[in-house]
Length: 264
Image (cartoon, rainbow, N blue to C red; front, side, top):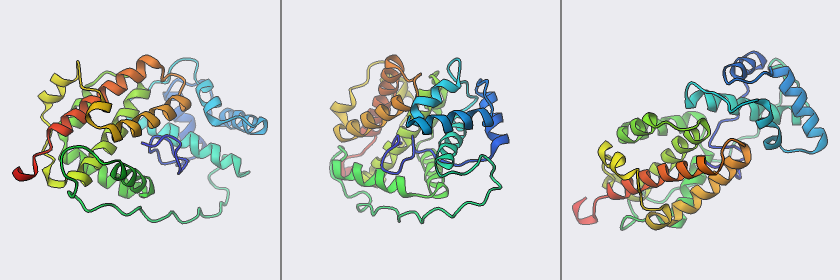
């Protein structure tokens, strides 16, 4: 999850516009009183005044948005981000309007050799290389990797799904936990074992801080959560603290699951 990082995507979200009908339905399910036309008018006015989308999106909801699942949140925000970009290019909210094909995405960044990192601490250069690689993946490639994550660490995904978190935090921790696993997988390869569910449950009340267990990952997570806070006014101090605690738990459990070189 890279907030609105170098690629302009937020939270690893694909900026896909599904059309006014789908957007209106997603807004209604999330509790917004506005439909796609009203949102478009707000976006156009904000762009005319030079405002950022992060200044506008929180005002689309009278209360904290409601989502049935993290996927619904991804779809809504992906549609909103894509609509903002579409309007900024002078296009309408109709998907039927011809649009120039987007520029070719850069090839995914090269990765270090899988499993070549010694010890159990993620090197800063590897963290940087992996997030850039993830950021350059197509939506299909990224989904395939998420499927690998679910298969390799089913207890992590099940534990995250069982947590009661505000929607902003749920979306952030699911994306960042996936990206953390991808970093561990590249760094340590087959030395990363499956994390037991009970380890996560036992660690969660008082995990070691990310800065202590994985300092390079801590810097990445801090920047990503800063960007989430800029995009979502509901992501306050208490919500962020819980997201940090959950991610510290996942990182500690993944670190513990890395076998020593001689045992691999």
